[in-house]
Length: 159
Length: 292
Image: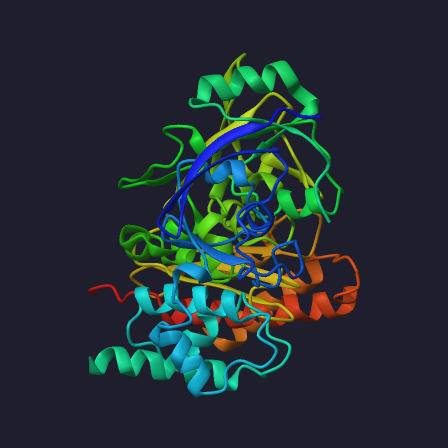
């Protein structure tokens, strides 16, 4: 048995303190220790993007990060993006453009798209496809996802 | 799919990291960005007893540029290389290469040093290191030394680095400022490891003859390769379609690529010729005109 590591971090704005086994991945910590099951686990080796979260403002694969490495950091998950009552504009765009089918990839897609739109407020379709290229969707064929992100970008401009 | 248990060691300085490496040697593994190592650990293909996490170490992430050299700390994130205006201005081939490394979330975390030392034969950073005659700066608790890229890469996932050594920085020697460049590859999907990757730099003198040529290939051998024969075929000649086709043929003849589930040896050889020709054509179009 390896030594437990004490960590403190901010998750969706709230302070968390915990003792974790070194091999505890960030995504397992979020799901099992904090009960934040909005972040999904797909491939567990960095290929599918379902577990994408923000770490200190940048998207990362939470299956390739140990929870102990997030000590002192700020993590944003899909639960910190919008609420059931007040969806984020990007979530509304996904809803309106039918960019969600089974929904498994959606939290990761939203986080990746948030970073994309933050870095490039007016992306073309190619930019969107490249920005989301690390997130796999087995249902939609991506067309409606690209459409939703494009719509969210234009709504952002209109405001 | 969880990694085997390990101890996570979190040094704050390079000296602390080197002391840990000396103490644990073969039983320790360096954790940089973790984008290659952690998948291997999740599959339990790697089961290090001690993981030395460099993410809290001070001073390993500078980006320094002077007239002759771009120096990158080992923990510079690939995304920061891609986003650096200074690198885009002075060494744009490196930016073009970064855009082909996996995906944004991977590059946010993945480091320059991690990719260089992991030494995947298809990876872009080792390819650029070989193309640009980079110098690897290694440190251990015993000594410091510098190794040229051509000596650093010794075989498939095999480098000159000793178990107690740490890559702390890499220096890329800058090519002539007005030369053209191209880094391109063929992969099954955007962001996958390349089946074949090529990096090309091309400079022309006042008489429009080629006076600087670099051609390097990834994915065609156990380590990235400089194509000296193709470079020789270019030097002193005027750029043109025939010349570039010929240089591609020379490169294709010079390689003996491996076969695997992604591609046969003969397909890789074919891609070598095509990609070298394409890259040279693109690079030639990017050579900045000189005042005559």
